[in-house]
Image (cartoon, rainbow, N blue to C red; front, side, top):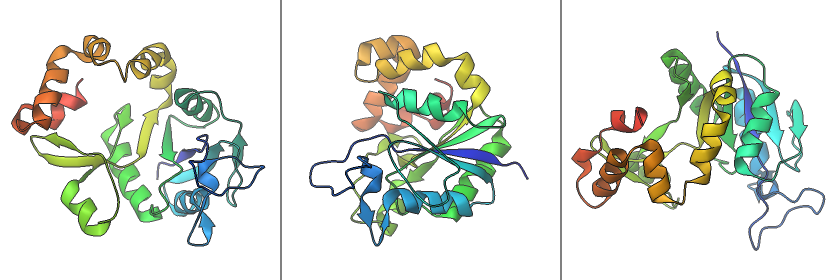
Length: 213
């Protein structure tokens, strides 16, 4: 069985009103049902049969972590810092603020993603399924030809792909709030299809278009 190291991103500061220890100023350290959000995610990763080591990036602590790294000054920097210490060809990158995650969810995603052989895999969840199971959860959704989906807050990455394309990835991330610049990077066709799909023309945006962007 192929196993990968998991990187949990826990560098985000707490939101207003969150109670976290002074020595661990991270959103991931907020308590949910008797455990920190981070601990819920660590437990899920640790219980997954496809996960080897579990690494956290942030000013945090939790049982079951193999390594804790100081955060950088950016989200992308935290991702790269985490995958640099991973072993093997792939790394699983996970958000730290998804306390409802389970080991079965992690294994289901990894078994499919690893089998695909792709450099980057991201899970998507149908809106109807998400709302049926978590009706109070607020999510961002994307309309496509195949349906309406939300993201699964996990990412399987080829480490070699990330190292080889670090500059281009950084450019794309920097453009995330500049639609015209991002369109020039990924293609105006993809951007126009995405915009039109959200206002009622979902058939213009098949998932393969996003996969090939």
